[in-house]
Length: 273
Length: 146
Image (cartoon, rainbow over all chains, first blue to last red; front, side, top):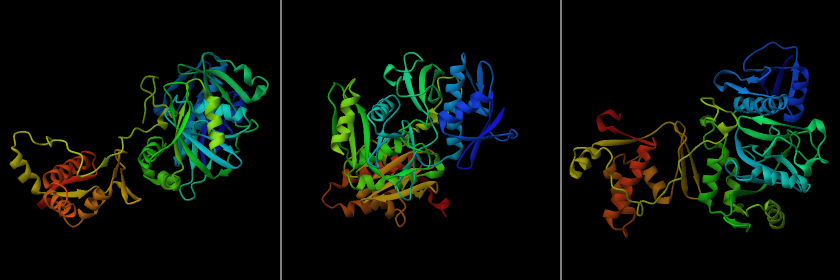
């Protein structure tokens, strides 16, 4: 089947068995249509690899799980790349309609905290990227599943009774074992819904088990925003424009997360809100 | 754009993190690095004369934003970002009227009478070097500047 996945007028087509198409759509939150011709960027699922367009190459997939996980992560990533909107590398959690953005480089603990928040009943906009409206500073979710890095590609035990079979998948992408959680899960923010931002929290790993929340000076705040923006040169300082109010109002903090203690970090976020 | 461990392949997921230089908070009266750039075979006096004949031209590939009395500059080609404090902001605007190193140094020296002029000169020089290196400014011969 050839399906056209689309979001905000940008699309990528994919040729894959119908069940794979359906699972990719459900996990990523992307809408799709079938019966279309191959046009523009095209992804092709083969038995042991996923072929991406042009310079993006191909991804080995030894198992059906690998293929599903890779497709559910890469198809939205290609669309987001094409869309080229002002986006920030941040997990985003919402309580009482107010969003906290958790900024930080890869492997700093964004997904861990987002997952912790989701289990605790917060709404999760995303664990990795968030769309920022430069004019209003409001944020909204992007079509991308939550990606949890694991030692093995199995669902963590504490999630067993929280997710149904259709809402998760496990496999390897590149050299990582991951479990992905779909956007359709209860508690995942729907696409298109906009939220005001309460705070920017710059995630850092603490040297010890202590968690602390400290005000960030404006240089640290601006540097973090610019380092974690996911935009191309077309957008320049647009993203900063959307978030400068938070910097001016000193609503940017450094959250030093104690080692192995994401629950305490979430508790800090909650109590300091 | 970041390349993944998957050899030679650009990974859209990892494309996410764009590398930037640390923000520069250059204070003309503080930062000093010896100006060795372009100095091959020249004495300090010759360098000074050479640079005095050059006009400083702002790149057209910039996005500029003022924030709380400071200036944020982004080079849209290299994606580098620098942030200039109030003195740097005044210098940046001053370059419209005084587009040479010597004139810029004089401008800042006048604006900061309490600071040792030698220190100001070194600071302004270092700042201009940094802006030239980052592609925010170009030094062009006076006659070619138009």
